[in-house]
Length: 116
Image 1 (cartoon, rainbow, N blue to C red):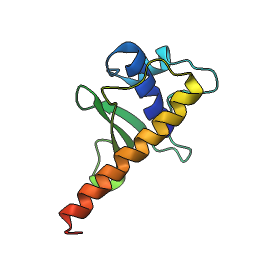
Image 2: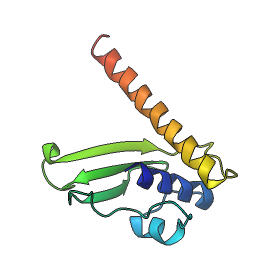
Image 3: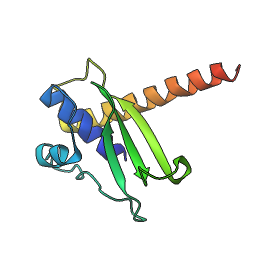
Image 4: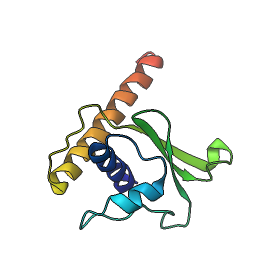
């Protein structure tokens, strides 16, 4: 799902806003060597993109309308200072680091909530 998030971030960096739907990403993000937006995982579970704010979105793996236990939701943010002048290979590396940074921040918040 990292490729989908990266493609959404690239679209946002070059389009100035989040895409409204995955079709926009498939249509406008055509970087050689980057995979297209997946519609299903390798094991057949659906993959859904949902914008949730001006710069925030979710990637949902599994039945988006089913019970919470039947899906995985990955919440991501495209930062205000997303670089627009990077080569695709460098942007791919930057996005991977950005996702790790966001996940670490979320983990820290959860640990604080647990009293850790």
